[in-house]
Length: 87
Image (tube, rainbow, N blue to C red):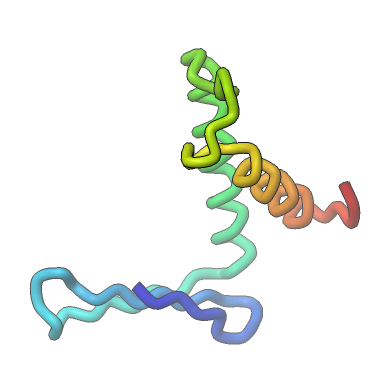
């Protein structure tokens, strides 16, 4: 998969098929809508885990995909895309 911003307003994602090298799929999305969808999906996922009692982690595990550094980066990302200048 190859991901590139075309013009700062759109994102192009190229996917090469795992089955044949001839099958290449290219998708173009509005960059703002794309990052907002990622933010919403991740937020809903964290809420689901919290509701199931699986989050927050009982103890910090740097190898866990939802460790403190990942969540800190996500929170900064979310804060910025929602128009906030500083945390």
